Length: 254
Image (tube, rainbow, N blue to C red; front, side, top):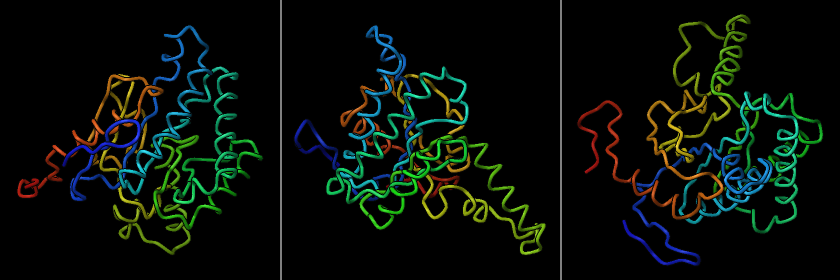
């Protein structure tokens, strides 16, 4: 493991065995970042959207196969309507930009996880088009958690399994952890190895609560718009130094 020079700073180089396959990030602190600058919260969300786009590039460079970002929770609808509208506009802009710069995004497979039903019809259509267009891309899968909540995801999965039991195609004793995992929005993907939360907060906030069972957590005292390559490498370096045993004392890293 070491550091190599790249345009704009240093990039962490680590052995594949020490590199997380899936990173989850709670993008937190946009509002506080804007407030510190005497600007409206919407200004912070715009800066946060830029940090997200840069993050995807940084993860591609570091050969991270899966990235899940917490963009908008099921609880975020309680925020002022102006702020909600601004976040949805930024999402529309991101989706439009992805179509306009197809050559730059050819390695990115985009998936939106969460309940898209409450979203505006045009936004749902944009999401469907982008997911279809990028489904064959293999560089990195980027899950955008939108109108997402970990408990809501579990309710969705359990209802699906309950319907199968009701129909007789599944019996209760066939319900396993693997079957539940296969009923989640992240079906077919590895669970996150590393979850990063900037902003100084020390909680999961209903993010990937099933999938995070054995994730390593890194909490950082930096607001999301200021999160960049340096902070990502710091989190990756800390992760590489962790001993992941999954309950088995013989499974420690050599």
